[in-house]
Image 1: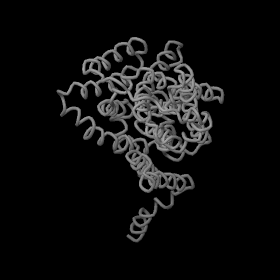
Image 2 (image 1 turned 120 degrees about the vertical axis):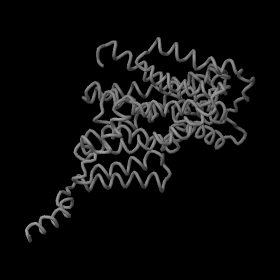
Image 3 (image 1 turned 45 degrees about the vertical axis):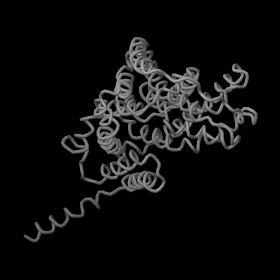
Length: 379
């Protein structure tokens, strides 16, 4: 009887007995993510559930990612089959206004230029010896688009999902910190103080309705591997612009997006088990992700400088930094930096055009990369 009681009491401390240094470190990492989300307001909708999921999965003997664990169930339900990122893309499409980029199509080129960091980082990851599938997932951090990074990584390198997702969302939240020094370094005072004329003309409803349809068909024919990404974001935008399915649009923007974000975040945190996350390659991935965002900004601003020259000094190169997928954060950064150097400068709508172009550009860049790699037999 006494032995049974002692064994029963020992069961209460088994968790403490199985604590190891990896567990403690992962608790600290999870706590840091919670702190960033709650105290610093850095992408709280994702970092809070990711941080909590990280803590949950590292509690000894919890077995939450076991075959019948509830975190494994959520993961299988929407991450391993890429469903959650695609549902979020419908919501993103429903929230995005492509009017600014349609009224000034040249800003779409800035959105394309802002994706070069993906391909440069892919090449660097391959040069550092990462397997091809992992290099693809690391490169996609340069999309500066969390759902795209999750979609690609869960499909081709699920073992890196935690590191890639944390890098993608952390650096997205740090765009207002990362971009301004690069913008200042690459532009002259004359370029930074350039005042761009107000956008003229209003985009017709017909144009706004045709845009998602045309992009879906052309993009799907060119890069069919990325059609799920492109199709879902354009479906959301078509619902928004049609004006006849407001209930579906609002549900995509709010209820569906909120529930899926919660499940997605906690599922990503569940992939951050200490033995898989605490490896030297995680630090390399974080460094490459930071470099990718910096390269996106560099390429966008440099292309903005090219447009400045070609337009005879009518384009402010600062809007080139908005050609990434961090919407609308990057556009606000461009507006703020423009007004810092010239109080009369109003770049927001032009930057929103580049930012909307970056939203589509990141998806198309991922689609093109996947289709090319499939054609080469890499994936």
